[in-house]
Length: 146
Image 1: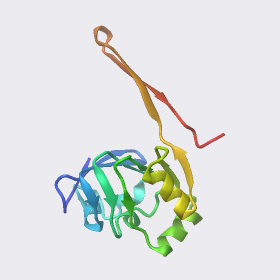
Image 2: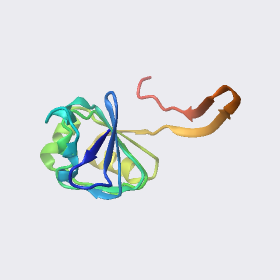
Image 3: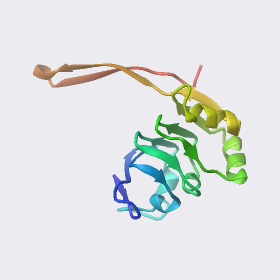
């Protein structure tokens, strides 16, 4: 887990190559500077960036701070992502997959940038068996592989 040096409400949760970012409002380039990190290249380790509910946008330079992203998951609260033409070209070259919900900014962003779009997974049900210490989440999973 990492914390933004710039905004105390911005938190990064790492899951191997998946990095989830939680917070509020629009994120800026400075929000990508986090502590405690092992090295300055910590952002290069991740190929999937998941932007969680509550974040409304990715400002200038934020997305460019994560150069190895091949999949960007945008929650329904995201309404803007700032990119440069150079970064758009790099995303197309790297075939970045945009994931989100139909009818949201994520789908429009993918279309506008010439990127592929795939609906995000949908949690359908939760099953708790407390006496056996089990917690199952049943999810409709959309696969990028056919």
